Structure formats: C-alpha cells, structure tokens
Image 1 (cartoon, rainbow, N blue to C red):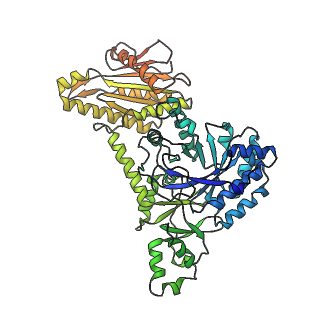
Image 2: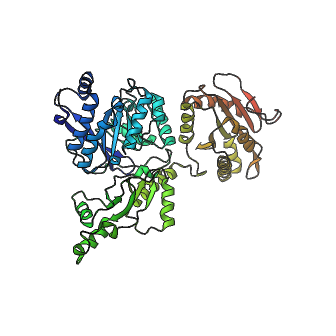
Image 3: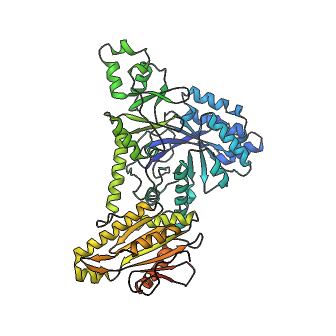
Amino acid sequence: MKSPRAVRFAFQPLYSLHTGGVVAHEALARPGQGTVPELLTQARREGRLAEVDLGLAIAAVRQDDTTLPLHLNLSARTLAAPAAMYDDLLAELGDAGRRTRDVVLEIGPPFAPLPADRALAGMRALTELGFRLALDGLGRGDLPLGLLVDAPVDLVKLDRTVLRGLPDDQASVAVVEALLHYTNRTGTRLVATGVETDAQLDAVRGLGVRIAQGNLLAPPTAAGPAPALLTRPQTTRAAGPAQCVGDFLRPATTLPESATCDEVREVLAAADAPSGVVGVDELNRPRWSVDRTRFLVAVTGPYGHALHAKRPAARLADTPHTIEARAGAMEFLELVTDADWGRTGDDVVVVDEVGRCLGVVLVTEVVRGVAEAKVEAAAALNPLTRLPGSDTVARDVARRITIGEPFVAAWLDIDAFKAVNDTAGFAAGDDLIRELGGALTALAGGLRRMRVSHVGGDDFLVVCDVDEIATVAGALLDRHWTADGMPVTVSLATLVCASGSIRSYQEVSRLLAPLKKRAKAVPGSSWVLSRPGSDRVEVLRGIGTRGLQAAAG
C-alpha cells in the first residue's frame, strides 16, 4: 500500500460570497494510483485505517506552504481512534507553526459503522484539542440527522450532488433553504461545494449561502492559492438571512503574545503581507494587534530597529477591537460608531463565544456589504408602500412548509379599484394604497410572525400564524376606508394550511386565486376562508353575515 508520505496534495480554496476573499483552503489527496477511498478501504482491511487517515493529514500539513486556515479530511471511522494517535499530527502542526484553531477537520462518510455516541465523543475530544470541525458530504453520505443536531461543528458542507439541481429543481432549492434555516438557527455555516456553473453560483448566492467552493471559482492546484478575490463578490440579497460579522471573516495572521518586534516585522514584510498581526495567548485569545503601516513606520524610522527590534511587539501594539462572530453586521457598525474608532482601516478581531480568535474583518468591508444589501433592499421595495415584493411571503411560506409549521396565507385587495381611480382620481387611489400598506406595516410590527408583501397595484399578500389571522382581519375590515371621501371596501381571501397539507408556495398561490374571486363576490368588506383539499369556503365577513367569527371554526 502506498505510504501517505508519497501521496501528493492539491489545495482548493473556499471563498466568502460576501467579500470575495479566500477564507481557507482544503487539502485534497492525489494518490499516484487509485483513489483515496480505495486507499482507505485497503487500510481498513489491514487494520490501519486511523494510522493511514491521520498520515494523510500529516502529509497535507507538510506540503502546505501558506498561512491560510487549512481544511483536512478525516473518515468518520477515525473518530474512534485513541487521542494518542493524534500526537504526530499535533507535532507536525507545531513544526509548521500552525495552531489547531487554524485547522478545520472535515469529518466525512461513512458514518453508519460508528455508533453515534462514539462519533460524538471523538468529535468532542478533537474540539478539546482546539480543532474546529466540519461535517462533509451532506446529501451524498449517510449522515444521521441526530448526529447533525448534536455534533460540535462550525461548518456543514453540502455535497455537489445537491447543487447539480440548481437553480431549476425545486427539491434541490428546498433542501438548500432548509439547511440554511438550520445553520442560521444554530450559528453554524453552510458551505456549497462543487460549484461548476454561473447559474449554480448565482443560485447559492441568491438563496443566502455564505461560503462556496468549486472549479468555477478555483480548481485544486498543487500550490496553495493566493488570497485573491473573486471577480464578482456579492452580498447576500436583502431577502436572504440577516448578515452577521462571520459573513465577512478573513483569516487572521497571529503570533504568540510574546513575539518580538523583529518577528512581527518579518511577517509584515513578506510578499503576501497581511494588513495586520494579532498577538494571541496560549488559548488563542487576542491580546494585542498591530496595523502594518503604523508598525513598519515605527520600526523602520530613525533608530527604530535599534530601539524596538528585540523588544516585545506588545509595546507598539494596540488593544485589539474584538467582536463575536454571531453579532449582526448592523450591531458591529453600531459598536464602531459608539467606540468612535477613527482608524476604520484596522482589522477587527472576530472571536468565538469563549473569546478565541477566529479571524478578522475590516470595518470598510462590513460598511460596503451592509450598504450593498440596503441598496438591494431599497430597489426591491414598492415605491408607494415601501413594502417588499412577493419574495418575502414566498420565502416564509416555503420555510414554514419545510419545517412542517401551520400557517395562514392571505390575499388582500381593494374592491373595484379601477372605479376608485376613475371617480376619485389616481392620486387618491395612490393615497389609499399607501394607507393600506401603512396599516399592514403597523400590524406586522405588532405581530412578530407576520410577513407582508405588496405584489403590485392594489394587491397585498400576508402570511402569519393561525392564531394571528383574526387580529389581522379585524384590523383591516373594521376600518372604514375612503378615497378622497369616497367609501371603499376591501376583500380578504385566506387559506389555512395545516402541517403537511400544502407542498409549495406555487400551490398556495393557485388555491388563493379562486378564493380571491369568491371574496370579491361578497358585498361589502369581506373575508372568506378555506383549507387545502376542501371545497368548503366559509364567508366570515361581508354584508349579510353576522360579523367576525373565529377562524378556527
């Protein structure tokens, strides 16, 4: 069997789709003969799986010549190996000047041969050594959902087999949306792997994926990638998940807090010089930071080298600005403003929940990202009501369907709106639409689960919880609407969707269309209600009915 030392490695970068920068790279083994799975299968038959698996990781560290965060692949079976077997990997990392926090171990299939409790115990042992973890091959392998829920991971890598269906296959879109919902709720990050086409890249960006990898972006190369930018960096669209500081993360250049000025100068003077250096303690917590320009001016000025060379770099360093990775981008900007940070070009150190350094962000990049997102959001708003288009409701409906959550979808419009315009004038009609949009906005402000879209003209869409719809209907139908003094009525068509009763937003839209016609056929301000799979339509409000009834009837 070929020795892991004889295996060559290619390195493929992972890109941030917010900043366009390389955030890490993955070591991919390239045996001279056969494949890595064949190599590991033979090793398992010989009872040497963990030895060979970890030997490949050691060889990858030895062949890596960059300072980028490094992703190494491990088989899930290796999680059962005793902690002592990782000693050689730890030693190799030490010789390379790397800390375990700069290494992500990607745990890949098969998972089934190892009991979940042993797998979790192995992962926790690796996190105690300081490694960060990722679950690899999601969608291709046999990863149990229970293990996904309990695993102490920072990243989840979505396999290329799922991305092949993007952007047209709705099932693939639904899977990505469901995983984004999971990762956003848990504070982990989803990586889209195997991005091969512009359409796939646009699709994952549009859905809100924050990190991507694939031959379209950069193929694996024998040498590690330079920290170049994508030619088309882009922020998550405004309709996607809220931006957090971690979305703008860049690798940090770190040195021990005891580093001398000469050691910092050597790092800053390198060809791929970073913008700054962070001094960390033995637990990888930031203790000081230096800005490249200010530091080099200090040590290269008159007598600078003689004064500072062998002395601790901390004497020329600043107290690091730090923020947690899960903090929102707007929260980050508020902190910058409150602290009156005049040097917005400095790196801001991003830390985890216990204060360990994860990387850095630049204030200018966060400002640009938030500004771009707000421009996109403003462009998507209806100019009359400042409400978003149908995507907002469509996405919330899809999310509720994915997680099996009951909801109500509603379609609201103004009765005989053309006659309103013809009688009271277009300006009065616009004022009425603005007033209706303002009422819906106020309702959504008080009902935290309610989402509103203005789909054009006098049509509005609403999605909310079942127990919220009576409040929504009452607020809209009990109000006397007028256009320049002319009385106006509105129609509300609602579809109550139990868990599992509906398959898509498109189906909701199709079922609401005849309900809207039914509501408009009822005299006065009206409210009708139905359910998927039922021909029964309940008229809950309109002239001739006995007032507002409970929607749950």
